[in-house]
Each structure stands twice: as C-alpha cells, then as structure tokens.
Image 1 (tube, rainbow, N blue to C red):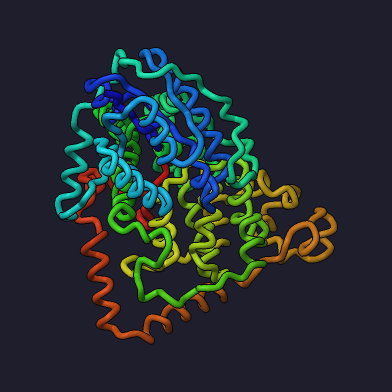
Image 2 (image 1 turned 180 degrees about the horizontal axis):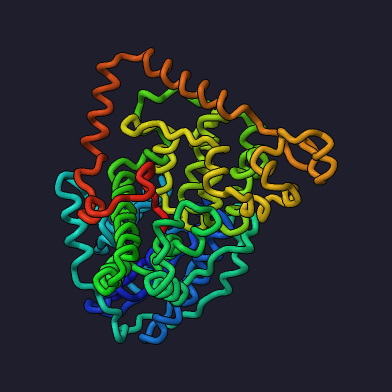
Length: 505
C-alpha cells in the first residue's frame, strides 16, 4: 500500500503535513516531477531551476537519512503516476495544496480527476495560512493566527521505504526556461534558509524598519527568506513562531518594532496568496473589469528598454540590473519598476509581470500578480501609486552610490549629476566619459508629463463608464478580497513605510 508524497513548492521534511501523514500510513515514496510543460511557461527561468535543484539535493539527503531517498522523474505528471501505479500500486497520494500559476492550477485538476478514476486516494494539506475553499473572509485573519500558533510537525524519524532511488544530475536537465544567468543568486536548500533565519533574528533585523526601503541597505537588513518560503525550504509557521520567540526575548523597543513589522509582512504573505487562491484568473486578467481596454498593447521598444535596464532613469536602471544579477530586489524598488512601466511608459501589466517573474528568484505567483495589479492600478480598490523616479532616486540613494555600483556608464559622475545625467552640458559629458544617447540612454519619456498623462487617461477611461457599475465592481472586489483586519501588531506599531504594503522577507 504505497503512500506517495508529491513534493512541489514544499522542499523540506520538517513541519511537512503530507510527509508526516504518509509516514504513518505505510511505505513512503517521496516524488518530485520535473514537468517539462511547466518549464516551458513564460514565467520560468534558469534561476528558479537552479534554486530548486539545490533544494532537491538537500531534500534527498534529509530523506535518505530517514531511510527513503527522493525519486525524481521528468515528464508529464499523470504519465509518471500511471507508470508508478502499474509498477507498484499506489494506495494514496499526499500533497500540500499549491496556489501556483494557471498551468499548475489546470494540472492539479487533471491529476485529481485521474486519481479518482483509478481509485487512488488524494490527501491535500494546507501548507500555511491559505484556506481552500474559503467561504468566509471575515474570519480569515483569526484562522491565520490559529494556524501559525498551532504545534509544528516534527520530521519523521524513519520512513518505511518503498523503492530504491538515485538522484539524477539535476544541473544538466534540458528545460525550456529563460536562460539569463544570475551570478548573484541566493543558494537554495534548508541549511541556507536556517542560516539566514538565525542571522536575521539574531542581529540583522535590528535595522529592518529603517533600511527595508533602501536599495543598498535592504539586502542586508531584510531577512532574505522570500525564495526559501516560495519553495518551502522552511515553513511559514516555523518562521512566524521563531519571530515570536525573538520578539518576546528582545528588550530593545526599537528592535521590537522591527521584528513586529517583519511579522506583519508574514501575515500579508498569506493574505495576497489567498486572493489568487480565490480567483486564479488574477494572473491573466484585470482584477477590476472597469480597467479592461486600458493599456492593452505594449510598445515593444519601451518594453525592451525597461526590461534591459535602459530606461534612462538611473535608479530604475540600477534596480533592473541588480535584479538581473542577484534575482532579488527590495519591495520599494520593485514597486518603482512597476510604476514606471505601468504609468510613465504605459506598458500592460501582464507583459511586465512576466519579465519580473522570470527575474525574481523568489517568484511566488499569489503575491506577484496581486502586487503587480495593485501597483499598476487595476484593482479598483487601491489608490494609484505613481512613483516619481527622480524623487525616489534622491530619497533612497542621495549620494548615488547604489547607481554607480550597478550602472557602469555613470560611475564617474559626481553626485550633482548622477540622478539627472541628461541635464549635463556636452562639455561635462565628455569630461566624465558619459555621452547621453551613446554611453547611457536619454530618458524614454518626460517622467512628470507622462505621469500626468497616465492619470488623465485612467480618469477619462473610468468616467466613460457607469458609476453604478464601477461601484458594484468595487463592492464585489472588497467583499471577496479585502482584508477584514490587520494584525494586532500593526495597530501598535507605526509603520515607517505606511504608503505601501511591503513584502520584504
């Protein structure tokens, strides 16, 4: 009676409901399937696979220590299940619920139907605070609190083995993802996740609140656990409870505020994923139908320049280049990238969302698409967030050190010109070796003028529709998706970045 554990975005053995339940039921076969069609989707990239491959290697080691290694197969999920069922006979499949992209949503429904036809039991377990199905948003926050406070599951000491396995060479897999290299990418695996969690709670979190918006300081002050949460190297419950323990033991009130602010973002993690769980087409279509017909066709030259870090706005280009290199960027700068693309450059959010999904090592579909739509102004229940790239540059990188680090053509510029190099006289351009239009591009648009035009077009688009219809849509969206309460800690602590919902883990 083989109990198959299907690993997806939950690459750990600790606090793993599916593995724990399977281990109590009979011989366990842990399975990860490299689904060829999934890796041909437009939101996949080499950096994602490299992180997963490292995590799978550690997962295999942890499983082997308990008596049964990880079986890794490549192909279609149902075809793999058919082969295993013919060979061994599957009694049940144990899996964590996944809120992934549209492809995985369709895949899960197909697998569920196939298992039912074969008489194989399917046991799906919640992985964190997302509820399936959600019937009452009013009680959601209380449910989140209760789940995070519940007892974590210990890793099985011994797994009844079902099959001898050998891990293939994961680095040579030929998949269809984007091939852009990411030399500064974070390493995957639970050991690295625990190291980051410990260093953050022990000392790095001290300056979290004051540094999370700074593009230069955030990489050290933020927990940097977002990718490890996205692929399940640690459980969210494990991180919440560790944060609670650090908060209770911390006598420094300023430090307490940083830890409290961090915990609130763990709550928002599930809040946003719940939106995609409840409405999977958020990945593909405007959340608010009132925004249909707006920004439908991208300007290919603008899209390419923005995606390559050649917008002509130094801070924006520095952010995009860091993202290409590191696979990570702090939330404020992510918002600035989306703002410039959606408003000043007037690019459809779906196009920019796919590019950013491929660049973020920590790509989490539920958070990603909900945040992109919110920052692009297509939710109908959030105010427009049009960032001024020059103001953000002066506020977040006043000396220009971050810009100089990532934009080589601007490295020799003095601070007086680093934020607006296009204003330099030609004589200074020659002197500093930075000719605008040759060594570094001129801005694609006049930022302030383009922002005003974007606001005006959105206003005119909305006013062309029935006010009653717009109000009805807003009411439906609020009822379905809006948060009913904030975490208590958010009422006690003044958020230093209250103009945004930051998800910097």
